[in-house]
Length: 515
Image (tube, rainbow, N blue to C red; front, side):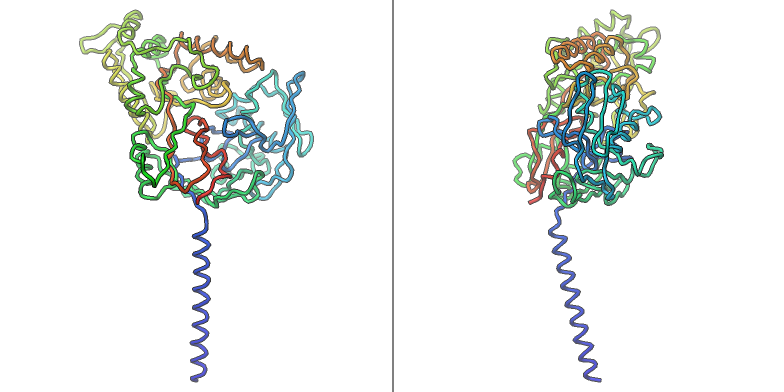
């Protein structure tokens, strides 16, 4: 009996040692895992064919082409291509051996399926107008696809950075409602592991990514909508990387525990007027007149703390800018003169009115964006000073058709066709203001359908002049994207010019590491 007890005790001790060893090795493995926690906005659907916005798209999906740190086109899923000028046809040669995250093989059929999906009006893709020049998509074989255009369109290579979708998972499905949008499968450097709604999205590295195996094992998109909360969570160590406001960034300056990346963008802010609304539909003089009442430099100084600059054009950040256009410099006297010239009269309450209609409206700001709200509040003060009653309101969901105005943001570091044709063209996917100007439409069409740079420069400069005659927005400011990171996060290229919402920082995420 004694021997049995000794044997049991010895066995139990051995088992305990094994548990401890396994436990210790497991803890070691966990401690060696490189995890990046990123402060992110929320998502309801992830599908690059339907929704342009979203930093996460570039991690899960890959396009035929890609961008480098200077926003130049480089090969993506296509290893090479040729362009036939006589037929306006691109022939793309795809990489061999690329796999979807579920292990299935990627092929030219997936490319055709994706572009057909985007171009199908029934899917109401907000980026469909980018691909309007495509007349034919031909699958030559599994690794070759031809894309024909009705005219030259040098922006097409930029638009083909769009993430390609897997035909085998979506063919015949309702693309807008399918569960794929909550469990996306791509060919990108990271793949979906889990999605805790409203809390976090966890991605794990794709060891078979066609460029190279990423060095960071896991990236967690922690949902932190409020910009001030992101700053607090950076300081508490809950986040490793997040974009913050200029006011919040100041607390990280000269702090060795953080790296502050002040990155330039092509991202502007402005007051978008809704021309579906009778106030602006029947009084088209208002956007031009009100634009003189906004002191943009004061906003850059007070809201952005100088980390941005005054805006007057949607193409101001690139080489297609027209520096000779009307810039609507701050001139409240001229603003009042323009209003009165159009029949507005200052009432006893200090607010202008016309034909019984007061010059009173709301401007909507999306919940959680403190910079836009601060800008809207200052604009409201400046407009009040000339006799205009504008009140900011904060909404979690935007009713584009029925609001008065919105504190909008747009801008692209890529081809000038991007964020102009689809934003200001009549009836295009991102024209949320219902703006319509036949001359603007014609100039944007001509500009996108020529590959002669001198002609494009001419058309885009004329386009900007036409906008000043019939303003869709009151442009306010271009803003820097300020990303605060732990100094252990390596690989960010602070010289890269980012896009709308500061998107683009993850362009080379497969090279990032955590030391």
